[in-house]
Structure formats: C-alpha cells, structure tokens
Amino acid sequence: MAILAGIDEAGYGPMLGPLVVTGAAFEVPDDALDGCLWARLSASVTERRAKRDHRLPIVDSKKLYQRSVGLKMLERTALVMASVAEQQPATVRALLERIAPHAVGDVAQYPWYFELDRALPTENDRTDIAMRANAVRRDLADNGVRFIGAFAEPLPEGHFNRLVERTRNKAVASLGLVFRIIDRIVRTGDAERVRICVDRQGGRQHYRSPLSTAFDGHDVQIMEEAPERSAYQLRTGRRQLDIEFTVDGEREHLPVALASVFSKYVRELLMSSFNRYWAERIDGLKPTAGYYQDARRFLEDIAPALAREGTQLSSLVRNR
Image (cartoon, rainbow, N blue to C red; front, side, top):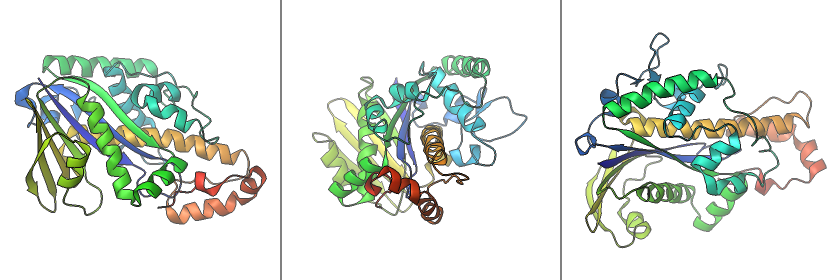
C-alpha cells in the first residue's frame, strides 16, 4: 500500500482572517498511486457539481461555495469526508482538534474567533452526513482505498505576521506550512511509496533547495521543472517520496481538490465568527471576506470598536 495526498490553501491573498493550508491523504494500492481517484471511486464521488447527481462532489472549493448561497455544499463534502476518516466533529473546536490539534490554542488567543464551540454541521443534517459517509466508505473499501484524514495548518493574523517577519517572505512562510503538512502525512505510516501533489501558488518553479533543507537526510532529485509542474523524488532508506507542485492541481487530483475543500471550510467557519464578533460591536456592519479593497472599508467601519477595545492592528491586519 502507498500514500497519495494533496495540499491546497485558502486565504493566501486577503488582509483579514487566517491563512489555512490543508493536506488530504489516502492510503491506496500501489497500482492506484499514479491513477485517477475520481475514476476509481466513481460510484460514490464526482469531479463535477450537479444537482441531480447523488454522488459526493469533491471539487475545487470555489465550485462549492459562494457567499450568496452559503456553506451547505462545501460543508457537506468536508464533513462527509471527515466522518469517513472518523474525524466527524460536533463543534468547530472538535474539528480543529482532529485536523489541527496544535493550532487550537493559537486560534483561541484571538477574541474574534470566539465561536469555537459552535455546533456542526451549521447548514446540514447530521443523519444525512452519516448516510453519505457510509456510501463513500463502502466505495473506498471496495476499491482498496482508505481516507487517512485531513491535516490542517490554520495561521491566524498575528501568527501570520510574526512568521512573515521571520521569513521576510509570504511565499516562504506558506511553503513552510506545506512542508509541515508533508511531514505530518509521512509520519502517519510506514508506506514505502508516498506521492504528494501541491497546488502551486505564485510563479516559483524551483524547489530543490528548500526541499533539501526541510527534509535533511533525503536524497532530492529533480524530475521536472517546468512552468506548469515541478516534480521531485526524495529517497531515504527504502522510502520514496514523490512531491510535485502543480498549477491548478485541484483540477487534476482529487486529494488536492479535497484539501481545497477543507481549507476553505475551516477559513469560512473562522471568518463567520470574525464577522459576528465585529457586528456585535458596530450596528449595521456589512461582513467582509477580508480582501484588500473591502478590508479597508471594513477597517474604517470598525474603527470606533478598535479604539474602544484597544485592539492592536498587528493582531488583526496581515502585513502581506
């Protein structure tokens, strides 16, 4: 058996709210390592969003979530797969404890993330989630596949700022979170073959040097470095670790699409709490998604509350 995983993020660009990087990992037969999981699991999951399709859509989170529609579809996919991995949470806190246990204390330091005990699901029925999870679980078992789980790295604003100050580069800070997730995934078992696909942000094309630093003791070989894909093979002892950084990875690899879903779901749960916190302090406040132009409007709107509470902007506004 081998491990097949994908990594994607949500919240790389905004001024407000957390950056969330997540990995989604599967244990698969060796002959499925280079295949398409959407095709192998076609009885229970789909790479398309269709109203009349009973299967679970595992697609780029942008196709499952629009603010005007709400969290329902995004939440359904995230919680069904969490249940498949025995990570089904009853609250936001429980979700974080399962997929990002080290981050719970970090998030709790920010008063605007006060809804950690909010019940889940927020827009779905628990019985429906459980029934859908049973169908996916059966399909995985029939095909010799096991969903290991999600591995998240949520980075709240103040923590983000301090990390960027240390690394002096947002992309380097984000790549460090990716490497932490890779390490967490690799430590889940002793599979001799591990393949991890990372959705690439920005124009970086060369990763051999940071990989060699992060995975000291591994022999790092360049397999390909091209505008659309950079691929590397890392070896230590009998273990082979294949890592590729791919543009639009969520369109090509089910695990990347699922990682996108978990990242977006965690970020939106935290942003919901963020907006509710400030709305309780400013009458008629319009919520924000945190992106630059609207974030500037939002900061102007909450200025009286910031002054009353003595909130430090370094803990609220991301510096990059």
